[in-house]
Image (cartoon, rainbow, N blue to C red; front, side, top):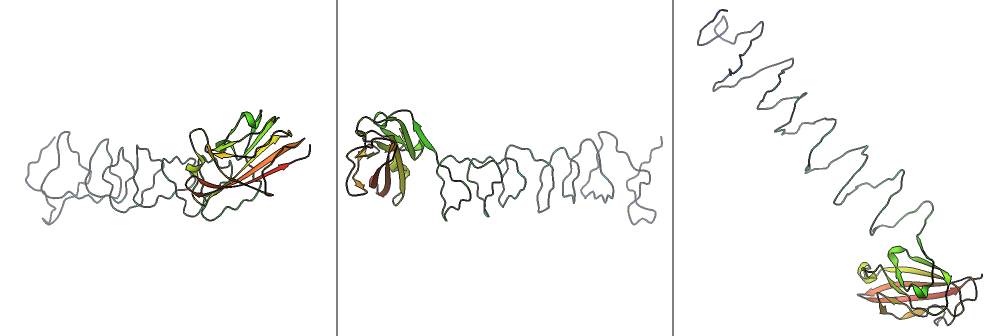
Length: 261
């Protein structure tokens, strides 16, 4: 093997670079160095098992990792896997199977549920009304017992409560959300709820008073007076429209009706 020792290599005219017509091999452990810049104008591929580069590339087709991606290019990939991502602008995506968010998800132009329904835990607030097209179903809490034996009416179980055992005495139901949540704490001033209690009729079984969160309230009975007896057959229906006027201050419109057997 021949060896050429020179300080500089230029083209034949002495004015430019030389062409390595058959390529060039850099032995292991050797480097290209200098105070200038190494520029490669490549129309094919640059490949290797391991390499590092600084600067910018117009396109990147294969890489074991990505570092220092800056600027404003469009990046198209199949999958992105990582421990987190931060976006300062708008993230737009289509055909997503699942969205699991620990914060608020904002849909700027609406939400369309095509199948499967929507299961919502907690309070749903609709600022501009609700339009329903189809069957509206409401949960009914059915108790195999008497109202007089189950005085706490927990609205967490539903707004309609049915008691299947015939009443035997008067009772004062207590309306709340559940054992640890008061109705006052979940209602804002100016809001209302309607609670319906359906009891299996007995002439001596009826409710002339009601409490809210354990506190007495004044009932305003439809027809002018509180009930004085239950029905002889069928069901008795007590309906209470509760309007919050101030903190722990409620107006209660009450109604009692009897059904046929």
